[in-house]
Image 1 (cartoon, rainbow, N blue to C red):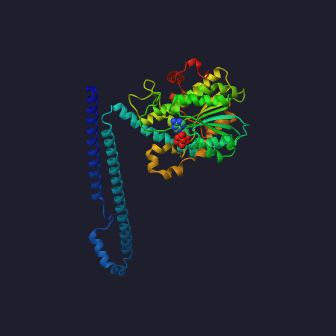
Image 2: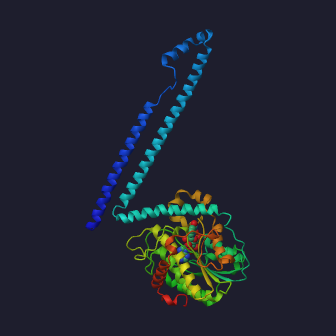
Image 3: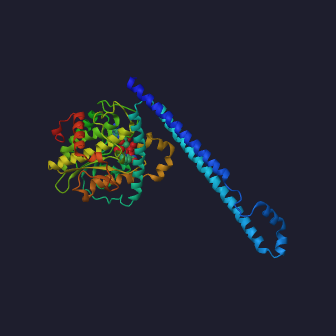
Length: 451
Ligand SMILES: NC(=O)c1ccc[n+]([C@@H]2O[C@H](COP(=O)([O-])OP(=O)(O)OC[C@H]3O[C@@H](n4cnc5c(N)ncnc54)[C@H](OP(=O)(O)O)[C@@H]3O)[C@@H](O)[C@H]2O)c1
């Protein structure tokens, strides 16, 4: 490791040691101060001194007989109050103890977790450790935010499927999860569906169980390969020179660092670059399908996970430093930004094609396979997440809803405008991403969509 790297590591070690010392010292001071309060707790906050209490206990009846009933009753009342008081003080003492134990246990767990995290990652520069920590926390935030949004907007997440009169749709990844429900919805609306899947034979069984299943065909498509994308687009165009919807749905989340045959980071390739390339290849057919007043539609299935993301323009394939969470966020952000930029370009060219991006919701699918959450709380996914059918609703909304005809570029969540991050709104960022994406997949910027 370089001198600079060693110095940085020493600095972190020193910082962690100081932090540990500080935390432990604070805990000890806190425990000591609390246990002192414990000792000081009055055991009998009764106004009678002990001897008087004893006298009254033994002579109580006599005193009553001599007419001092009031003093006895006073005493008995105060004694019972005292007992109650003692009990409540004891219970508040116990509460203090419990709070203390919880505080110490939490501090211990947090510091241990931080220490283990730091130890495992101690070879990494501080900026990467902090960035990973930020992504880990922000991604949980985005997930919880997404869940709350799903519950708050539960009534909005609806669509009445129209009769689309045998329009043609291309859907990537229709064999399972949200994609298969999108296919079901499109078929129900009388749309002819071409699914791009890795195993076309798997669609046969699905088609048998769907209304209008005879209107579904599948071609092989592996989004890890640009060659496969090109072949798929060719297959589609050969048979269907005009199409009306392109739903870029297929996706992967997390996993180890893997570079595709084209040299791209896997999540970027599958989620963004291949769909970007497919859009370019199918745009001529989409342009033929769109009419003024009823534009053809490109729907990028993005995610609320774009929110903590940014585009690493200088290292988009994350060769220098790979964080799987950041890679997923980047790829989903790229889908959202591309939809905005492509839509703007098409609008300027006067083409009747709109592009949208959609967050389907937090949906119980295999996408979470590689997450700790699925392993730890599979029941919570069943309980709190949307079903794939509900996750398909905002995507079908993006395909069919008339009210968004003039709102191309929209980011949709639960059939309404979703909250997208600041980074995605900057035009110069969108343009830069568009240019880098063109360069990576080998298209001339001015030739996009004119294949
Ligand atoms: N589930 C959620 O909570 C959630 C939230 C936000 C966004 N999304 C997005 O929604 C989309 C659908 O996800 P899902 O939840 O339905 O996930 P899923 O159940 O895991 O389905 C993923 C789909 O993508 C396909 N796919 C994966 N790698 C592929 C490749 N290399 N080539 C071709 N197809 C490939 C899979 O096809 P195979 O059957 O061949 O593997 C499968 O059909 C994704 O883009 C995801 O990012 C999901």
